[in-house]
Image (cartoon, rainbow, N blue to C red):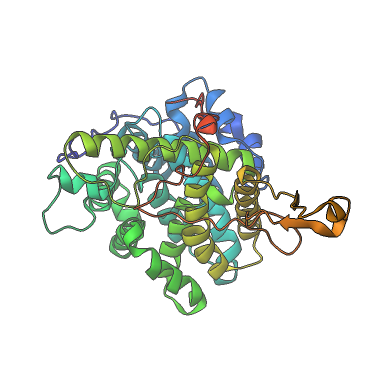
Length: 397
């Protein structure tokens, strides 16, 4: 349970493969335009699943560098070498911070750059630097938070984000080892480090503020906003894909919560315990969707495709929680006849209203909230408490 203190192992020397991505070009072209494109199925179909980073990375690098002087075997070979080191640095077989997440983040960042930076006509090397940052932004991630990393005594004692510092440090070493430091230059190397550090959730509110002032920010800040958005974009995916990402993320949270208890550390509020019901799980999702994801994506563009899908996923969580709420009950007549003359008189009936909170249209009112002092499953009937545990069967690489 420690962070790597030495540079990640370099790829083997010699010629690096630069063309094996071409057999997947049509599928990857679709990934850039189809919100239903499934990166999990794509990865599962690869002969070597661990190559997902290099395949997607070379595909994107070729798109960015085509028709430039840098579109040559020497540069692409260096990119391939860097990507090989990156994919080797992702050590988790299952969870959120995996090779698949790295590739998905890079694809999403590429899409967002085309939308939000289209008018700026970025230098292809700036785009390449941003995409390489996306691939490496979680390299070496152990699958737990900075809070737990600090509890283990890893990283510098005064470093508020030891994980992101490690990601940035190892990325710089790999870029140098791959021979890309000269091509990118000092300014872009600094930009890459800034982008990776800004993926720390401690900077989320800062990223929201910069998103609100996006057009007036400098390039490193704008690309940092976009990488942060791409990194937490799972709530903006199509509903089924969003749920797959959510399960993987929850797996890491629940494991960290258990590990924290095991070593006698109180988990932070941001690391919830296992939910035993669908409403409890949906409440945790809803808190992240509404309080974290929505402010950032709405600040970039309230009408973007990402924001629209996010709002749809928020509504689906609200609907699920409402479905488990106690249904409204019709007023019940309780006869309290005081004499024979009133026994047949309907006016003698007293009405007792059910106290379940309802809106004006009769629908149950649901006010989701997540509190560190309250178990979201606490109010669910005991018969439902184990009604819908998730069974994750997704692939690991």
